[in-house]
Image 1 (cartoon, rainbow, N blue to C red):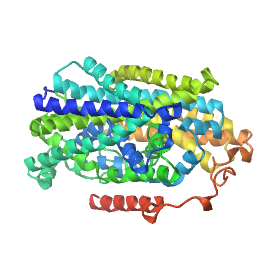
Image 2 (cartoon, helix red, strand yellow):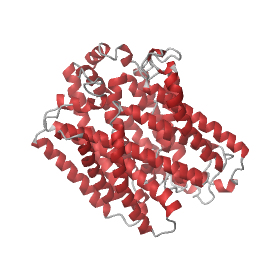
Image 3 (cartoon, rainbow, N blue to C red):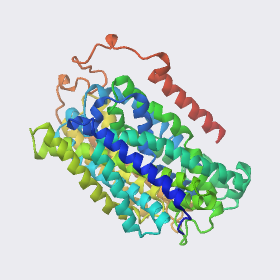
Image 4 (tube, rainbow, N blue to C red):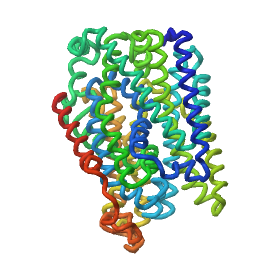
Length: 556
């Protein structure tokens, strides 16, 4: 894409923003005395901070460039990633799963698996999560590089290195607190950047009605304006595939796998000051999640009708947002929008790097490499691992650069890494009979199942292609959805089989880790102060689901 027409005013706004980012990191550094302060913010943050950080951590390249690219490539059905593919899982995390995470005082998702199963399960999940976090960090780095390249015309490799440097500075300085408080700032900067783009873009094209008419005449056509149309099993024409893939693959396996077991998100809730705040963290984040499609999907639709070469050899879908910014926004507004984009990508990468350093320090280094060292030692390890994580993220950014739509790549990763973990978790939480060796066996089987579908089944199954024809173009979305389902089923089946063949843990070792097995050392629920009715997790969750149902009916 062409270099954006930025001037000194735009650069001045970007410099001010980066000064704020580094300043927040320096202030947060003053509160760091222990490894828990650096890696989990000392579990001291209020719900409104962790809630905004929770959603901001997701507002990275996946959300901004990825969803806009999806909007341009697949149309309005992209809203499924929000309404069926996010909000229900966020509500489930807040109401059902956070009491297990927070109440057990685990420091990470792998640590829960250690206590529920055994060390092999813990190590397997710790290693696979570390790999996934670094691959996801690379996605955000690549997205930041796209913007820096558009700003300065630098080559991608140099842009990636410079982008990594900004994130490295403020995470190394302030740890998780620095990342979280920056994510709160970034949330508002992101909104300030995207809202004007949507308003100006819609106004220039003549409003929503004119946009839909133009989409019908574009490469997307009529199917690009339907959420559930064309999802019939056996003869799907919807850009995302059939309803089984959307409901079960995206809405259940991938969504719940990401939001309930991805430590990059869960870590924000674990940093909350108490269980009530931890439960409200994903529920507060659910409300902006409901309406964010207006800021991501609409720009994608605008891009597909206004940028003729988008998605072809002339330009990939990932450049939809920056190209629209260069087209519509005047100087000044362009600087704010670019700061919003860079804020989004830094938030996404910071979430991945800060979760990686926690898992690596606590779940790999402390447990398997250097045991029984001082807390200061592990604090220093956390800082060193942060640097290493960013350096590895630089290399994984080049993998992401090979995909014209980074959302296709992200969903592929989630099928390999999140879907198996969710299957193991859901069985572990509700079936106390599940045995230690069933944990690692199920995870390994789920990962193998995803690989088998992606590389052995899908390439030879015509149903995965457009028109269900052997000569049709493979549809990456339905392939990823079905691969996730395969991973979930393979994990669940092997977990059950191994459980029936091996010995379970004594029930007393599962206290606080399994539904219906309370922790005798936990506070008596009757003595815990209940939040006001308007802060009730069930009320907040119910309202979020109600909003989703209403919007789903409107855009049916």
